[in-house]
Image 1 (cartoon, rainbow, N blue to C red):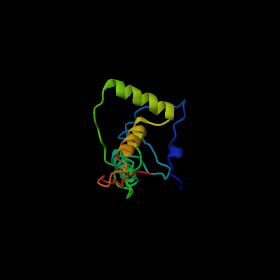
Image 2: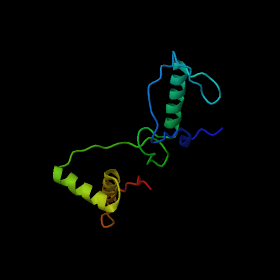
Image 3: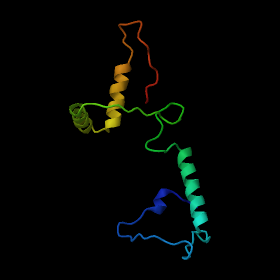
Image 4: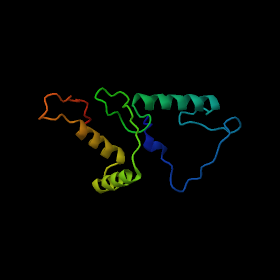
Length: 124
């Protein structure tokens, strides 16, 4: 039995409301009654499966070994942020992709300088 995400798409005209699983009889496709405990178990399993696919949070791993990609945060002047956003939009990429490319380009080895440190961690 397929249980891909497409099976759980909510139509645009659907009405969504809270359900009290203690009092209402909600059944799964296999006939089991959905109880608060079962709902919590299924949610936990879903979160674990997402973690196993490295989907927490955001995009897939940029690391070669598939492990969680580290995150870097830094502050910039407003004008620099604006310029970066304009450039990212023009290139059709996210701000993260643009920043990653700039960081990678900055860390590329200087072929004229034998003392430069080569950083072989470039994401593909």
